[in-house]
Length: 405
Image 1 (cartoon, rainbow, N blue to C red):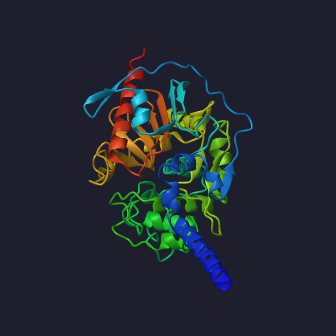
Image 2 (image 1 turned 90 degrees about the vertical axis):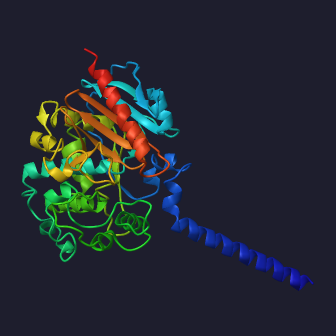
């Protein structure tokens, strides 16, 4: 009997260990789903440095002053048959951080998120693409990149024979490489998810994920939003400058605008470590407001032309029919066009915005002299209703501020 009890106890321990191991394997396989959805996502989006390797973008030696002139923002916007307030926007669209700059002054700042605050670095997802674009513009002005007509493979010979052996820097900037499939975050086999699994160390290298996609159209003829396009663009930048994205961003952007906090890029777990040029930049709301103000002021900061003015103008609109507002295709909201790794808004003011999944926004309106930063923790990566409501609210906010003589 004693032997039976020992056997039963031992079997129970083995079963428990086996169950724990199986549970651990399940958590490992599904880690992306767990950390990107409520209730964990709000913590994840402010603590990415605890989940992946990182490379720091140091704050400026002399942070710039971002003048403050706080004021209430008493405006409403119409959505779903009712007049909504800014407080409604935050609640309904799960805002975590929010800042508004008007005429060069920080007029409003709020952090509704449970883990948010002025010093917290937020995972900006595809807002990273707009940062990459600006760095490419600077590298072109300096001559490190010869021309937007240069083929990507000229700088990245490891892509020879792949779908990216042919597209130019220009094609990549406009998401018109002709390579890869839909950016479908719910499809496990979508190129973006293969890329993210590689970054997380769950299968293959980042280079293998990029090389795995097939061509679907002639480069330069069709818009197809793809994080892989920006990944290649980031590699072009690194190869041309001899700097990592973090190093180049520190030298040419974060330092010149006087960023008050360190930012960082999340890196792949596997070696060689690589930053995701289309989705791994983490920064404070205030410093992203500085970045937006740089773009609103034509690329100038403190009397210095940090970003070429012509590069800023490119980001307002490409002048290409397949990239115009409403022409991107049925998979994309009709209120957006695209240019230079930014989403364009059209109209006389030619406002433009950086976007990131789960509700990250950087709206730049040079005509109205308004910049809005919004970080969020949506329950899903892409939600047309939440995007539409946010876009409507931010447009109403700009109108409200513009009415202030």
